[in-house]
Figure 1 (tube, rainbow, N blue to C red):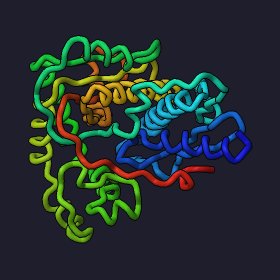
Figure 2: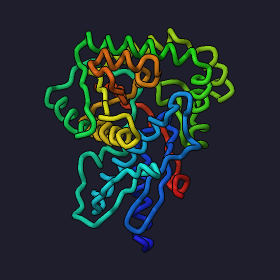
Figure 3: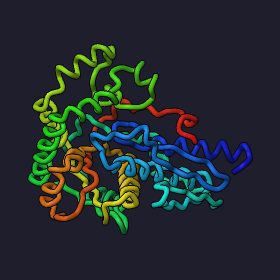
Length: 322
């Protein structure tokens, strides 16, 4: 892929990869193009040390980007083989010619979003749940599907407990606020962060958003919001890697992204409710409640059917190339 056509294809694969989710939509990745490979690297400038002190979410996000790249490559006639380099902490995706195959998961890449609004509360069918469980699982990642109302309420208890702890942490609040984009103009300028409209909030001037955040960001209101959202969901998926290391975090990201793409293909929405796995003091209790004593749950995701929300923006490909 040293020719101009090959470079253009590599850039298109990177564009598809960047449509993956990342914590606070930081887009914490960089890409290095080679003649027959693309290497995905963490971008340390886009870390979130308050919510993600050990870079867990960074490497999950790299896994999500990897999964998008693999599906995009196949759709363009390239077989992608991804390998994590523990020494360099990068993912090298080797590319080789093959027959093109456009899958429903590839088609879902541009439509996938973390939909932070309410869902319709209706259960999913057993076939849909089985399909989601199948694509969201690998030999190194287990996915727990929680659909019973008492079990969902139990998860909600841990979400509220952990969310209350996060909101009492000034460093967490400052970090979150720094990634909120209060209006379309600010979102278009940065092309990253949490555009307030994606959560159903109105566009307001940045100066007013700063004030409103300080006035209105209160534990009770946020906890009530999460209660409404979880109770409107069809269920919750918890992803658990076999080990708590960066290679497995990448694999968790790949499994979650397959889940999210398959859900999108089925018209099912999803969004993270990761507070119980982000707060270190709560995480072991949450794990024990799920029967995972001694293990680290990696992601908590609610899912169900509901209307789309505005999508968050992405930086241009040139901005993520090295």
